[in-house]
Image 1 (cartoon, rainbow, N blue to C red):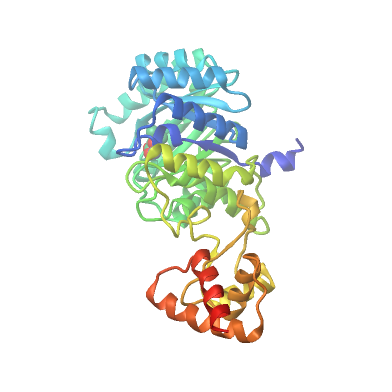
Image 2: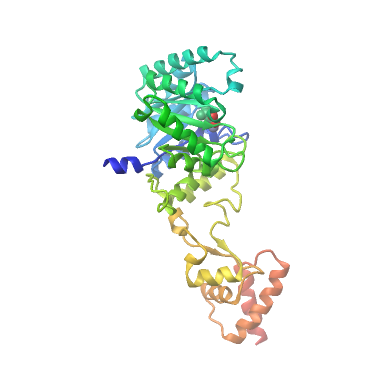
Length: 390
Ligand code: KIV
Ligand code: ZN
Protein backbone atom coordinates (compact mmCIF):
# COMPACT_ATOMS: atom_id res chain seq x y z
CA UNK A 1 0.00 0.00 0.00
CA UNK A 2 1.35 3.46 -0.82
CA UNK A 3 1.47 6.02 1.98
CA UNK A 4 -1.43 7.90 0.43
CA UNK A 5 -3.68 4.87 0.13
CA UNK A 6 -2.81 3.79 3.68
CA UNK A 7 -3.95 7.22 4.88
CA UNK A 8 -7.19 6.97 2.94
CA UNK A 9 -8.08 3.56 4.29
CA UNK A 10 -10.72 3.41 7.03
CA UNK A 11 -10.99 0.17 8.99
CA UNK A 12 -14.47 -1.15 9.61
CA UNK A 13 -14.88 -2.65 13.08
CA UNK A 14 -18.21 -4.43 13.39
CA UNK A 15 -19.68 -4.92 16.86
CA UNK A 16 -23.08 -6.39 15.93
CA UNK A 17 -22.23 -9.50 17.92
CA UNK A 18 -21.16 -7.57 21.03
CA UNK A 19 -22.68 -4.08 21.35
CA UNK A 20 -25.49 -5.06 18.96
CA UNK A 21 -26.34 -8.17 20.89
CA UNK A 22 -26.46 -6.08 24.09
CA UNK A 23 -29.73 -4.48 22.85
CA UNK A 24 -32.42 -5.76 25.15
CA UNK A 25 -34.12 -8.62 23.32
CA UNK A 26 -31.53 -9.03 20.55
CA UNK A 27 -29.89 -12.17 21.88
CA UNK A 28 -28.72 -14.53 19.13
CA UNK A 29 -28.14 -18.26 19.31
CA UNK A 30 -24.71 -19.82 18.96
CA UNK A 31 -25.25 -20.91 15.36
CA UNK A 32 -26.76 -17.54 14.41
CA UNK A 33 -23.64 -15.79 15.74
CA UNK A 34 -21.38 -18.06 13.71
CA UNK A 35 -23.44 -17.37 10.60
CA UNK A 36 -23.33 -13.58 11.07
CA UNK A 37 -19.57 -13.67 11.74
CA UNK A 38 -19.04 -15.60 8.52
CA UNK A 39 -21.12 -13.08 6.54
CA UNK A 40 -19.16 -10.19 8.09
CA UNK A 41 -15.83 -11.82 7.26
CA UNK A 42 -17.05 -12.53 3.71
CA UNK A 43 -18.16 -8.95 3.09
CA UNK A 44 -14.73 -7.57 4.01
CA UNK A 45 -15.21 -6.22 7.52
CA UNK A 46 -11.71 -5.67 8.97
CA UNK A 47 -12.38 -6.40 12.64
CA UNK A 48 -15.23 -8.40 14.16
CA UNK A 49 -15.95 -7.84 17.83
CA UNK A 50 -17.36 -11.29 18.45
CA UNK A 51 -18.52 -10.91 22.07
CA UNK A 52 -17.63 -10.40 25.71
CA UNK A 53 -16.00 -13.71 26.67
CA UNK A 54 -16.28 -13.36 30.44
CA UNK A 55 -19.99 -12.45 30.26
CA UNK A 56 -21.14 -16.08 29.97
CA UNK A 57 -20.04 -19.53 28.96
CA UNK A 58 -22.07 -19.11 25.77
CA UNK A 59 -20.32 -15.85 24.87
CA UNK A 60 -16.94 -17.46 25.48
CA UNK A 61 -17.77 -20.44 23.23
CA UNK A 62 -19.08 -18.17 20.47
CA UNK A 63 -15.98 -15.92 20.46
CA UNK A 64 -13.68 -18.96 20.52
CA UNK A 65 -15.46 -20.69 17.65
CA UNK A 66 -15.67 -17.50 15.58
CA UNK A 67 -11.92 -17.06 16.19
CA UNK A 68 -11.22 -20.63 15.04
CA UNK A 69 -13.29 -20.25 11.85
CA UNK A 70 -12.26 -16.71 10.90
CA UNK A 71 -10.52 -16.17 7.59
CA UNK A 72 -9.48 -12.56 6.87
CA UNK A 73 -10.94 -10.54 9.72
CA UNK A 74 -9.26 -9.73 13.01
CA UNK A 75 -11.31 -11.32 15.81
CA UNK A 76 -11.71 -9.18 18.87
CA UNK A 77 -13.20 -9.81 22.31
CA UNK A 78 -14.18 -7.29 24.97
CA UNK A 79 -12.73 -7.21 28.48
CA UNK A 80 -13.15 -4.85 31.42
CA UNK A 81 -10.05 -3.41 33.07
CA UNK A 82 -9.13 -6.41 35.19
CA UNK A 83 -6.82 -9.38 34.69
CA UNK A 84 -9.54 -12.05 34.91
CA UNK A 85 -11.55 -10.46 32.06
CA UNK A 86 -8.45 -9.98 29.93
CA UNK A 87 -7.22 -13.56 30.47
CA UNK A 88 -10.63 -14.98 29.59
CA UNK A 89 -10.80 -12.80 26.50
CA UNK A 90 -7.36 -14.00 25.39
CA UNK A 91 -8.35 -17.65 25.92
CA UNK A 92 -11.19 -17.09 23.42
CA UNK A 93 -9.57 -14.89 20.76
CA UNK A 94 -6.15 -16.56 20.66
CA UNK A 95 -7.60 -19.19 18.30
CA UNK A 96 -7.81 -16.61 15.53
CA UNK A 97 -4.93 -16.02 13.12
CA UNK A 98 -5.45 -12.34 13.95
CA UNK A 99 -6.59 -11.90 17.56
CA UNK A 100 -7.30 -8.60 19.32
CA UNK A 101 -8.06 -7.84 22.97
CA UNK A 102 -10.28 -4.80 23.54
CA UNK A 103 -10.17 -3.54 27.10
CA UNK A 104 -11.99 -0.52 28.49
CA UNK A 105 -12.80 1.52 31.58
CA UNK A 106 -15.17 4.46 32.13
CA UNK A 107 -13.05 7.62 32.45
CA UNK A 108 -15.63 10.42 32.81
CA UNK A 109 -16.36 11.79 36.30
CA UNK A 110 -19.68 9.90 36.40
CA UNK A 111 -18.02 6.63 35.46
CA UNK A 112 -14.97 7.08 37.69
CA UNK A 113 -17.33 7.36 40.64
CA UNK A 114 -18.66 3.83 40.13
CA UNK A 115 -15.49 1.89 41.06
CA UNK A 116 -14.71 4.86 43.31
CA UNK A 117 -11.21 5.34 41.93
CA UNK A 118 -9.23 8.57 42.11
CA UNK A 119 -7.76 9.86 38.86
CA UNK A 120 -4.35 8.50 39.87
CA UNK A 121 -5.71 5.11 40.87
CA UNK A 122 -7.52 4.79 37.57
CA UNK A 123 -4.43 5.82 35.62
CA UNK A 124 -2.51 3.11 37.44
CA UNK A 125 -5.19 0.51 36.66
CA UNK A 126 -5.06 1.47 32.97
CA UNK A 127 -1.29 1.07 32.90
CA UNK A 128 -1.46 -2.37 34.54
CA UNK A 129 -4.33 -3.79 32.51
CA UNK A 130 -3.17 -2.56 29.10
CA UNK A 131 0.37 -3.85 29.83
CA UNK A 132 -1.12 -7.20 30.85
CA UNK A 133 -3.17 -7.41 27.65
CA UNK A 134 -0.16 -6.46 25.56
CA UNK A 135 1.92 -9.20 27.16
CA UNK A 136 -0.66 -11.68 25.86
CA UNK A 137 -1.45 -10.21 22.45
CA UNK A 138 0.30 -7.76 20.17
CA UNK A 139 -2.99 -6.25 19.01
CA UNK A 140 -4.61 -4.35 21.88
CA UNK A 141 -7.43 -1.84 21.68
CA UNK A 142 -8.15 0.43 24.61
CA UNK A 143 -11.30 2.50 25.17
CA UNK A 144 -11.94 5.27 27.69
CA UNK A 145 -15.68 4.67 28.03
CA UNK A 146 -17.72 7.91 27.98
CA UNK A 147 -14.73 9.66 26.42
CA UNK A 148 -16.90 12.47 25.09
CA UNK A 149 -17.83 13.48 28.67
CA UNK A 150 -14.31 13.08 30.09
CA UNK A 151 -12.20 16.15 30.96
CA UNK A 152 -9.76 16.76 28.09
CA UNK A 153 -6.66 16.93 30.29
CA UNK A 154 -7.49 13.64 31.95
CA UNK A 155 -8.41 12.01 28.65
CA UNK A 156 -5.05 13.02 27.15
CA UNK A 157 -3.26 11.72 30.22
CA UNK A 158 -4.87 8.27 30.23
CA UNK A 159 -4.57 7.82 26.47
CA UNK A 160 -0.85 8.57 26.75
CA UNK A 161 -0.59 5.92 29.48
CA UNK A 162 -2.47 3.35 27.37
CA UNK A 163 -0.22 4.02 24.38
CA UNK A 164 2.93 3.70 26.50
CA UNK A 165 1.57 0.44 27.95
CA UNK A 166 1.23 -0.98 24.43
CA UNK A 167 -2.25 -0.19 23.09
CA UNK A 168 -2.24 -0.20 19.28
CA UNK A 169 -5.75 1.21 18.75
CA UNK A 170 -7.32 3.94 20.85
CA UNK A 171 -11.09 3.95 20.59
CA UNK A 172 -13.04 7.09 21.51
CA UNK A 173 -16.54 6.04 22.58
CA UNK A 174 -19.45 8.43 22.58
CA UNK A 175 -21.09 6.01 24.97
CA UNK A 176 -24.34 7.91 25.47
CA UNK A 177 -24.66 9.48 22.02
CA UNK A 178 -24.06 12.94 23.46
CA UNK A 179 -21.61 14.51 21.05
CA UNK A 180 -22.31 16.42 17.81
CA UNK A 181 -20.35 16.30 14.54
CA UNK A 182 -18.23 19.42 15.04
CA UNK A 183 -17.35 18.37 18.57
CA UNK A 184 -16.61 14.79 17.50
CA UNK A 185 -14.09 16.05 14.93
CA UNK A 186 -12.54 18.57 17.33
CA UNK A 187 -12.01 15.87 19.95
CA UNK A 188 -10.09 13.58 17.59
CA UNK A 189 -8.06 16.50 16.27
CA UNK A 190 -7.21 17.65 19.81
CA UNK A 191 -6.14 14.13 20.87
CA UNK A 192 -3.96 13.65 17.80
CA UNK A 193 -2.28 16.98 18.43
CA UNK A 194 -1.82 16.77 22.18
CA UNK A 195 -1.17 13.15 23.11
CA UNK A 196 2.47 12.07 22.84
CA UNK A 197 2.69 8.92 20.72
CA UNK A 198 -0.69 9.57 19.05
CA UNK A 199 0.90 9.12 15.64
CA UNK A 200 1.88 5.53 16.52
CA UNK A 201 -1.69 4.28 17.03
CA UNK A 202 -4.98 4.16 15.13
CA UNK A 203 -7.79 6.28 16.53
CA UNK A 204 -11.25 4.73 16.36
CA UNK A 205 -14.68 6.27 16.71
CA UNK A 206 -17.54 4.45 18.48
CA UNK A 207 -20.79 6.41 18.38
CA UNK A 208 -24.19 5.73 19.86
CA UNK A 209 -27.30 7.10 18.25
CA UNK A 210 -29.29 8.60 21.14
CA UNK A 211 -29.68 11.93 19.30
CA UNK A 212 -29.67 10.39 15.83
CA UNK A 213 -26.17 11.70 15.09
CA UNK A 214 -24.07 8.52 15.23
CA UNK A 215 -23.32 8.32 11.51
CA UNK A 216 -22.57 12.05 11.21
CA UNK A 217 -20.35 11.91 14.31
CA UNK A 218 -18.42 8.90 13.01
CA UNK A 219 -17.81 10.52 9.62
CA UNK A 220 -16.75 13.79 11.25
CA UNK A 221 -14.25 11.84 13.37
CA UNK A 222 -12.83 10.25 10.21
CA UNK A 223 -12.40 13.64 8.60
CA UNK A 224 -10.42 14.68 11.68
CA UNK A 225 -8.11 11.68 11.49
CA UNK A 226 -9.87 8.64 12.99
CA UNK A 227 -9.15 5.59 10.85
CA UNK A 228 -11.42 2.97 12.39
CA UNK A 229 -15.21 3.19 12.56
CA UNK A 230 -17.04 1.00 15.04
CA UNK A 231 -20.49 0.13 13.81
CA UNK A 232 -23.19 -2.51 13.60
CA UNK A 233 -25.45 -3.92 10.91
CA UNK A 234 -28.78 -2.03 10.84
CA UNK A 235 -27.37 0.20 13.62
CA UNK A 236 -28.28 -2.44 16.20
CA UNK A 237 -27.03 -1.64 19.69
CA UNK A 238 -27.73 -0.44 23.20
CA UNK A 239 -30.70 1.97 23.49
CA UNK A 240 -31.00 3.84 20.14
CA UNK A 241 -28.15 1.77 18.72
CA UNK A 242 -24.74 2.35 17.18
CA UNK A 243 -23.49 3.87 13.95
CA UNK A 244 -24.97 1.74 11.14
CA UNK A 245 -22.32 -0.02 9.07
CA UNK A 246 -24.34 0.28 5.87
CA UNK A 247 -24.69 4.05 6.35
CA UNK A 248 -21.01 4.88 6.86
CA UNK A 249 -19.81 2.50 4.18
CA UNK A 250 -22.28 3.79 1.58
CA UNK A 251 -21.69 7.42 2.58
CA UNK A 252 -17.96 6.94 1.99
CA UNK A 253 -18.68 5.29 -1.35
CA UNK A 254 -21.33 7.69 -2.65
CA UNK A 255 -19.68 10.90 -1.39
CA UNK A 256 -16.10 9.89 -2.02
CA UNK A 257 -15.71 13.23 -3.80
CA UNK A 258 -15.83 15.06 -0.48
CA UNK A 259 -14.84 12.20 1.87
CA UNK A 260 -11.97 10.50 0.03
CA UNK A 261 -11.63 7.42 2.25
CA UNK A 262 -11.85 3.76 1.32
CA UNK A 263 -13.14 0.68 3.08
CA UNK A 264 -12.68 -2.97 2.12
CA UNK A 265 -16.41 -3.75 2.38
CA UNK A 266 -18.14 -5.40 -0.58
CA UNK A 267 -21.30 -3.31 -0.51
CA UNK A 268 -23.26 -5.75 -2.67
CA UNK A 269 -23.45 -7.99 0.41
CA UNK A 270 -25.16 -5.35 2.55
CA UNK A 271 -28.79 -6.25 1.89
CA UNK A 272 -28.37 -9.93 2.58
CA UNK A 273 -26.62 -9.44 5.92
CA UNK A 274 -29.08 -6.72 6.90
CA UNK A 275 -31.96 -9.13 6.39
CA UNK A 276 -30.21 -11.93 8.27
CA UNK A 277 -29.41 -9.68 11.25
CA UNK A 278 -33.00 -8.41 11.32
CA UNK A 279 -34.27 -11.97 11.36
CA UNK A 280 -31.91 -13.48 13.91
CA UNK A 281 -31.98 -10.51 16.28
CA UNK A 282 -35.76 -10.16 16.01
CA UNK A 283 -35.30 -6.40 15.35
CA UNK A 284 -37.10 -5.48 12.12
CA UNK A 285 -35.63 -2.67 10.04
CA UNK A 286 -37.78 0.46 9.94
CA UNK A 287 -39.30 1.01 6.46
CA UNK A 288 -37.59 4.35 5.90
CA UNK A 289 -34.19 3.33 7.31
CA UNK A 290 -31.34 4.72 5.18
CA UNK A 291 -29.85 2.21 2.72
CA UNK A 292 -31.58 -0.98 3.91
CA UNK A 293 -35.17 0.08 4.70
CA UNK A 294 -37.94 -1.41 2.56
CA UNK A 295 -38.63 2.07 1.15
CA UNK A 296 -35.00 3.13 0.59
CA UNK A 297 -35.33 2.32 -3.13
CA UNK A 298 -39.13 2.55 -3.46
CA UNK A 299 -41.05 5.28 -5.29
CA UNK A 300 -44.78 5.86 -5.34
CA UNK A 301 -45.46 9.38 -6.51
CA UNK A 302 -46.19 9.97 -10.17
CA UNK A 303 -43.48 12.62 -10.61
CA UNK A 304 -40.84 10.42 -9.02
CA UNK A 305 -41.88 7.30 -10.91
CA UNK A 306 -41.90 9.18 -14.19
CA UNK A 307 -38.42 10.54 -13.45
CA UNK A 308 -37.16 7.10 -12.45
CA UNK A 309 -38.45 5.58 -15.68
CA UNK A 310 -36.57 8.18 -17.70
CA UNK A 311 -33.37 8.33 -15.66
CA UNK A 312 -32.93 6.64 -12.26
CA UNK A 313 -30.45 9.31 -11.17
CA UNK A 314 -33.31 11.81 -10.93
CA UNK A 315 -34.40 10.35 -7.61
CA UNK A 316 -31.71 7.87 -6.57
CA UNK A 317 -28.14 8.65 -5.49
CA UNK A 318 -27.14 4.97 -5.29
CA UNK A 319 -27.87 2.05 -7.55
CA UNK A 320 -29.90 -0.72 -5.89
CA UNK A 321 -27.35 -3.21 -7.27
CA UNK A 322 -24.65 -1.51 -5.16
CA UNK A 323 -26.20 -2.91 -1.99
CA UNK A 324 -27.28 -6.22 -3.49
CA UNK A 325 -30.83 -5.43 -4.63
CA UNK A 326 -31.84 -6.27 -8.18
CA UNK A 327 -33.94 -3.19 -8.94
CA UNK A 328 -35.71 -0.18 -7.49
CA UNK A 329 -39.29 -0.68 -6.54
CA UNK A 330 -41.98 1.42 -8.19
CA UNK A 331 -44.82 0.96 -5.74
CA UNK A 332 -48.26 1.27 -7.30
CA UNK A 333 -50.46 3.49 -5.16
CA UNK A 334 -52.74 6.49 -5.37
CA UNK A 335 -49.83 8.82 -6.10
CA UNK A 336 -48.66 6.82 -9.11
CA UNK A 337 -49.00 8.20 -12.60
CA UNK A 338 -49.92 6.88 -16.05
CA UNK A 339 -46.29 6.31 -17.13
CA UNK A 340 -45.62 4.02 -14.17
CA UNK A 341 -48.86 2.16 -14.80
CA UNK A 342 -47.98 1.57 -18.44
CA UNK A 343 -44.51 0.38 -17.39
CA UNK A 344 -45.99 -1.96 -14.79
CA UNK A 345 -48.42 -3.37 -17.35
CA UNK A 346 -45.50 -4.08 -19.71
CA UNK A 347 -43.58 -5.83 -16.93
CA UNK A 348 -46.65 -7.96 -16.32
CA UNK A 349 -46.80 -8.84 -20.03
CA UNK A 350 -49.72 -6.60 -21.06
CA UNK A 351 -49.34 -4.21 -23.97
CA UNK A 352 -52.57 -2.16 -24.00
CA UNK A 353 -53.85 0.56 -26.31
CA UNK A 354 -54.35 4.18 -25.23
CA UNK A 355 -58.10 3.82 -24.67
CA UNK A 356 -57.77 0.76 -22.52
CA UNK A 357 -54.91 2.39 -20.58
CA UNK A 358 -57.17 5.38 -19.89
CA UNK A 359 -59.88 3.06 -18.61
CA UNK A 360 -57.48 1.02 -16.48
CA UNK A 361 -55.98 4.20 -15.06
CA UNK A 362 -59.37 5.54 -13.89
CA UNK A 363 -60.21 2.22 -12.19
CA UNK A 364 -56.70 1.95 -10.77
CA UNK A 365 -57.04 5.38 -9.10
CA UNK A 366 -60.42 4.40 -7.62
CA UNK A 367 -58.91 1.21 -6.26
CA UNK A 368 -55.81 2.99 -4.95
CA UNK A 369 -58.04 5.37 -2.98
CA UNK A 370 -59.49 2.35 -1.19
CA UNK A 371 -56.28 0.32 -0.78
CA UNK A 372 -52.87 1.38 0.59
CA UNK A 373 -50.99 -0.47 -2.12
CA UNK A 374 -52.20 -1.89 -5.41
CA UNK A 375 -50.60 -5.27 -6.08
CA UNK A 376 -49.68 -6.90 -9.38
CA UNK A 377 -52.69 -9.22 -9.12
CA UNK A 378 -55.02 -6.20 -8.78
CA UNK A 379 -53.58 -4.69 -11.95
CA UNK A 380 -53.94 -7.92 -13.88
CA UNK A 381 -57.59 -8.05 -12.74
CA UNK A 382 -58.09 -4.49 -14.04
CA UNK A 383 -56.71 -5.53 -17.44
CA UNK A 384 -59.27 -8.34 -17.66
CA UNK A 385 -62.11 -6.13 -16.45
CA UNK A 386 -61.36 -3.40 -18.97
CA UNK A 387 -60.85 -5.87 -21.80
CA UNK A 388 -64.28 -7.39 -21.02
CA UNK A 389 -65.83 -3.93 -20.83
CA UNK A 390 -64.26 -3.09 -24.21
O1 KIV B 1 -20.31 2.48 24.18
C1 KIV B 1 -19.25 2.15 24.76
O2 KIV B 1 -18.61 2.92 25.47
C2 KIV B 1 -18.79 0.78 24.57
C3 KIV B 1 -17.44 0.47 25.10
C4 KIV B 1 -17.38 -0.86 25.73
C5 KIV B 1 -16.43 0.62 24.01
O3 KIV B 1 -19.46 -0.01 23.93
ZN1 ZN C 1 -21.03 1.02 22.75
